[in-house]
Amino acid sequence: MLVSKNIICVQSELGGPVGGAALGPRALLNEIVNEVDFNIVKCINTDCLPIRKSAFKNAHYLNEINDCLEDISNSVFEYYSTTDQKLTVLAGDHSTACGSLAGLKRAFPTQKIGVIWIDAHADIHSPYTTPSGNVHGMPVSAAIGLDHLNKKINNLDKAEESAWLRTKEICRQSVKCEDLVYIGIRDLEEQEWDIIKENNILYYTPKDMDELGAKKIASSVIDHLNKCDVVYLSFDIDSMDKSLVPGTGTPVELGLKFAETSNLLKTFINLEKTKLVEIVEINPLLDNKNETAKLIKKLIIE
Image (cartoon, rainbow, N blue to C red; front, top):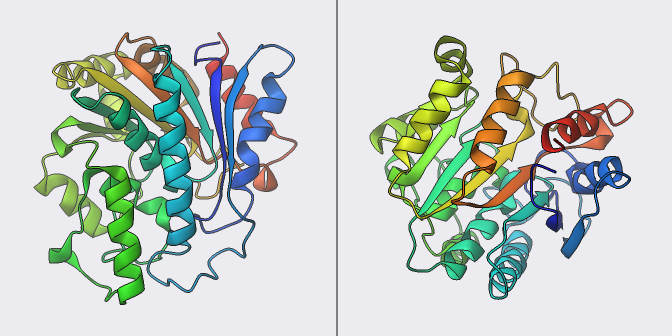
């Protein structure tokens, strides 16, 4: 298997706009169970709650998500306390990815962490800038520790402010803007494009992929992160074209193709520096006979 057989499974969907993502990790595991002898290091669950019915309108279920982030951070940290082998995290929606990064930073506190974020979305909103309140659009800001108050459109009450402060405390400023690279982004609000440009964050769109090719972009990303000691790879399946991945909560057209996605994943996962690979946003309730999980299986099983 291309990714590590040691797996943390995070069954959570509180950060997204539709239900079903919590079932994504199990849907993928069901596809590979007869071919791979994997090891579930930890299975983390959140309560099953009505989607977007939280008291926090600017950060739905952030208190509950924070509890999950702490569990993930602790699990990743504990894993690396006994081994230096690579780790896979299979998660529901993308809101919990900053918990994985927090654990990685705790495990390698003196090391510089590079992040490769393959996604249709930048996930760099904060509760102050989000138009939806969906926390799956905020993990990058949480990991970096950004509020974007100069782009504020929402006023948070004290409970929301306290919850967001706790999020940032859990995430420990585990990554810097200069050590982040986006691949596949295309469906962003104007504020997000501005944030990326103002912070000089390197990014490649699917159009760039068509023009430059996967090999050249992968080489550029590796060169950009050459001063990083540890690499974290986050793969949101909606980075791929919506025709390939119907079973995801926020599909977007004009995305990455299968072959180029495969080439990117193989290159980045096989880097010696890559310690943790996260796969998110498979939603079998939106799928057709689990065809999306079957496709992702082809990407991760050599």
